[in-house]
Amino acid sequence: MEELRTAVFYAAYDLDPGRGSSRVLFGAGVNQRTVSPPTPTPAEVAGLLETVALPDIDENTLLLALATAVDTAMYWQEPGGEDVLAGTPEVRGALGRVAEAIAATPGISGWSAPMDALEQWAVTFADLPGIPRPPTEAAREILDRWQGLQLEEEARAQRDRPADPAASFSGTWWSRPALGLFSTTRALPGQGPMGLRFVEDTLGWEAASVERVHIPADARIYEIDGAAAWAELAGRYPLEVTASRRHDWYRITGRTGTWVIPDWSQVLHDFDAVHLTIAGYLSAAGTNIRLDADRSTVLAGWDPDATYWLTDLDRDASTVADWHLDGADRLWRPSPAPR
Image 1: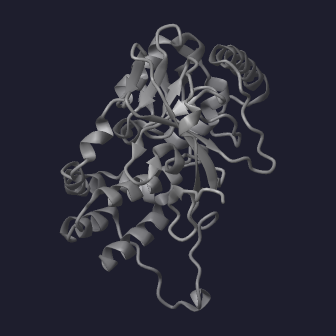
Image 2: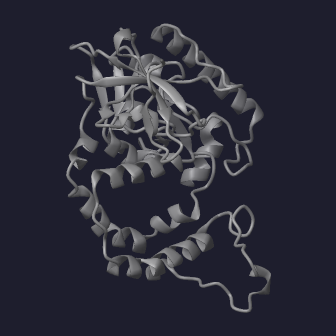
């Protein structure tokens, strides 16, 4: 295992786009080295991966791995060396038995499950200095304003940003529904709502309140269980965002061309909410998802198991509870009741 870790470290460094600049090798005596560092190939990493003994995999191990994947998701720069290494044909092939072991873990079937209508929880993180809270408005008002802002941003980007996708520009990189919409997740036994722990691009919250939400029996839910479902949604309600997304999405996918996202102000006419399964997140987020010969889309900025509501919901104030992030093990726990 240690040999594999070492090989991954050096192979990822060699493949990292920031090698020698944003990512460097350093340490005691590094300038006095007389022997060059090792340069393992992806094939050599794959060979080690195929022979190393796999540890026992339980649900907590998988949740830790999921949290790591969510924490390290970045849509505004090139994939890191570890991502490039994992995407090589040799290493992808060697990871096959790891995938089989994960798929055989008890409880993993829930990762492909649709939204649990019997138990949905909303999370409200505590205020942070300098971070404004999203507006509290009706969902329809939020979505109407969102569409106008998207059109304005796209027109401004067409006017002010270069058409070269490799130019050093960045802007809006996400494709999730509008900020301010209500979102919910299921809860994990003993760990609280998933919306506490699995948050992309987190702002470092350490306190939050949670509350249970009752879902209408006739709620129309669109399920995103993979790239095909996301492509179908974006193709049915397309909103072009090429100028505003091309630079960031070129960096993460290497693709040039037309980009679209779902127009959430139109989706609300047919659906009350859109849910992303955990499996859908892991298989589709951050990838180039083709709609046709000319258009593609990216699923970005959306947390696993999150359901975004395009309509208003009744909230149950009797279920509100405070939670905090435990500094010892970085897990969320219920806060003690005030005395």
